[in-house]
Image (cartoon, rainbow, N blue to C red; front, top):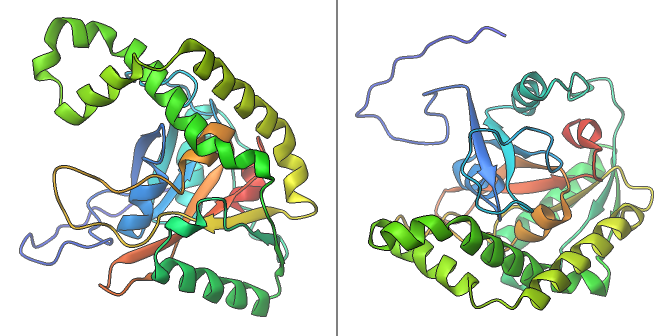
Length: 279
């Protein structure tokens, strides 16, 4: 695919269509592909865990870190992932019929903002009007523990993977990261093992949750991007469970919030069912 190089007037507004570059990589341990894609009004694709090799990346969590792609369109995000993973099947089937979609509010729904809740309802009506069959899907109660499990795994493994840097140069590590890693050393090994066991059980159960649905639709973020600060890039609460489940997720730009900032929705697939999820 050929791309035009577009020059920009740097005095113009910075927005989701800056056109600085067509493709990018991201890594997701909690929500660092899907969440920023939602905030910026672009497509973010977190493949099934280990689809794209992590060689050359500093590991934060062996169990969670997943390389994904960001682009302006879903076919572009799929193309980049296919090229670097030798997965020619990661393509969008333009001839596919209307999908069967499960609306999944997740166990973290109470963390969403009114604009996301309204967007969810609007999307359901729009998709239904376009011919998709829409059903409500509830995650089993067991899945309610997955958010805490993801944080346990991320903290425990993050502390171990950054132990050398903490030992040699703790004063040069960003304070928030340093605190996260240091708290990870307080996580009991038995709690870490229990978190891994819960994740394995929920992964084994995930395919059955879909029923006859092709994909699930879930929030990509609680709401609009937070006010710009150097202290936070927003809450990954709507992404962390899918990351630990290893499921493929695509953020699709779907609207704007009360401040005019982008909102996105997550299309979630079964493990290794990336092509259908992208389509």
